[in-house]
Length: 235
Image (cartoon, rainbow, N blue to C red):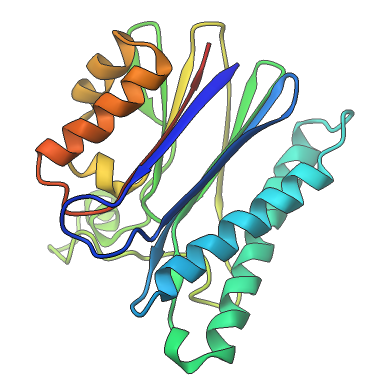
């Protein structure tokens, strides 16, 4: 299982508030964490940096070889909750960072299974057998609108983020991973500009590094109005 990660500031923003970290923490285990920060005066960058580092350190140091699915689930969720506390506390200690937060999507791939946690609207997709499916659910008002058939509201308003509230309940998903399965994590700087069919076409026809570069370039050509971050995992 290999991976490629790339982040780009885009064509409009003055700062890249996305953060990503992906590593093999064991010969057959890949961990990737992606966060998209929110907040002015560098606060968004601080939030995403704190979250990525906290989550990655806790998972990579806490994962044991004999952990079953339930223990992995608990470790991933507790690591995101710990990051939530770290970001929330930091925002309260510095008035200029009040209200800062970040989305988060992560995946741990181990022994033919993928374990996902997400908060916010950064996404995870599974690509396999010529098909693509979104694993995670967006925590946005548009998602609420579609699910509950409510009156229209600001569609990109984030309803849940790491560090905004003292406590958080992340979403958790897991699925089987085959030899040809690819896993894509991305910030909304990609998903706002690429539909699933476009992502599928770019990923299916190329090697991992070329596919990631093509996805970023595609978002840039569509306007690049946001930071763009992509992680692609596969063989």
